[in-house]
Amino acid sequence: MYNFNAEKTKDECVKWIRDWFDVNGPGCNAVIGISGGKDSTVTAALCVEALGKDRVIGVLMPNGVQADIDDSRAVVDHLGIKNFTIDISGAVSSTLKELTDKGIEVTNQARINLPPRIRMTTLYAVSQCHNGRVANTCNLSEDWVGYSTRYGDAAGDFSPLAHLTVAEVKAIGKLLNVPAFLVDKAPSDGLCGKTDEDNLGFTYAVLDKYIREGIIEDEDTKALIDKKHKMNLFKLQTLPGFASGLPELTE
Image 1 (cartoon, one colour):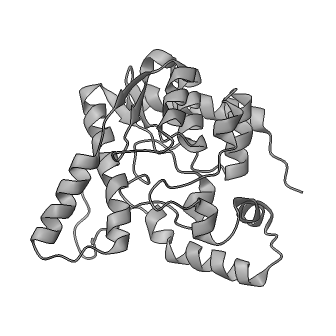
Image 2 (cartoon, helix red, strand yellow; image 1 turned 135 degrees about the vertical axis):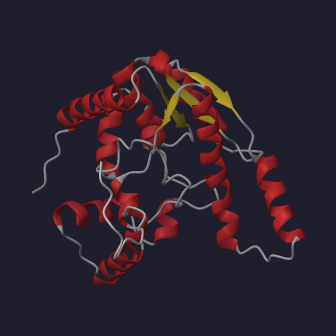
Image 3 (cartoon, helix red, strand yellow; image 1 turned 135 degrees about the horizontal axis):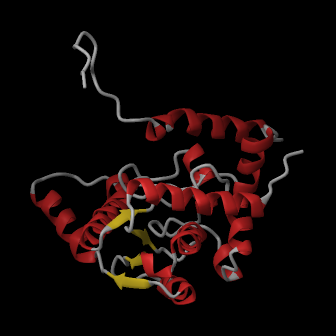
C-alpha cells in the first residue's frame, strides 16, 4: 500500500525551491501564471513559503472573459503577493487573424493550444522585467498522459510539482492552508469548456492509483492510459540534437 507523507514532501519541496533559487537565481523572483486552479495555487503557496511573499509574482492572463477569474484573484489576495492582470485576447485574436489572412486553415488543436503558448510568452516577458524565474505548474499525473501544451504550460524554469500526483498536490495544498474551494475545484484547462477528466476519459483518482501502485481495474482504461503515456513521452524529454560524427567540445 502506497503511503504519502504530505508534510515531509512539502518541507522537502520548499527546501528544493529555496536551494534551486540560491544556485539559479539568487535574489530573483518566482513568476507564476495564476489560473485559479490547484496547481498554480499550490505552486505559488510553496514559493511564498520558500522565498517569502515579496519574491513571488502572480500573473493573471484572461483570454478576454474568464469565467473563474475571481478564483485567480482569490489566490493572489490570499497569498498577499504582487500581481498583474494581462488580457491576452488581443494577441490571440491577432495571431489567428494573421494565420487565416495568409490562407492557413486553423485546426481546432492549434486554436486550443495557442492561448497557453501566448500565456507562457507573457510570463517570460514579465519575468524579464522583474528579475524573475518562471514556474512550471504541471503535475505528474498530467505529464504522465501528456495533458499539457508543449512550450505552453509545459514550459518554465523550475517545476515544483513535476513528481507529484494530483492527489499529492491536493494533500500539500491543504497543509499550506490553501482555501478548500481552490484545492478541490474540478480541474479544467479553461480552453474548451470541459473538465480534465472529461477530456481524458478517466479520473485522476484512477490514474494516480495506477501511477503509484500499478493497480487498475478496467483494462480498456489501462490501455488508454498506456497509449497516452507512450505517445506523449517526447514532451518530457530533453530536446534532441544531432551530434553523430561531430567532434566533442572541449573546455
